[in-house]
Length: 247
Image (cartoon, helix red, strand yellow):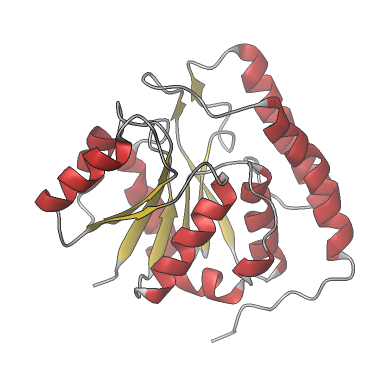
């Protein structure tokens, strides 16, 4: 049976963390969870440690000293997943903006439909975003259009953060050379997988804005993404990407 790991970065998610963990464990497929905890002052780590007594075999946590960035959290999680032999590695938010039931659809895309990277897409079948102000919907939607234009990737939701990777993808990408820490990280990982010859597949989801806790989005995050895309494209002209092994 395949080993599946869901990586959940956290900072001040005490209102959500127990419920999201229990929701993941209630799915028909078996998922393990790795929480990357960035020194939340609200006691998020304490809640996870309590739950680890209930789920000692499949709930893990890496505690870090402070907010070190989304990208570095996932890179730490990816390396841990590879060291511990997982076959399918997932990215998911803690705040229920990503529906845990959709983990099964992402898994199916990679395990049964030929995807190397499955992307939970807000825009592949219209605009499926709930409870966002229209200004943020438009910013996100056109940011994805912009990234698609610059990079040449045929992906509607280029900034999506709900994904499943086959193990081979993370083994092939040089994770130490992924440089972006904010939301440009999501673009960089997709673009790198694309340049390495992996198949990216979008799976339609409905994205629901968080009800509890506070968003970690900021203008600087979008600035990094806007400029970062151009830097990625220019660098790709001279960069050699390791290629997917053909079977």
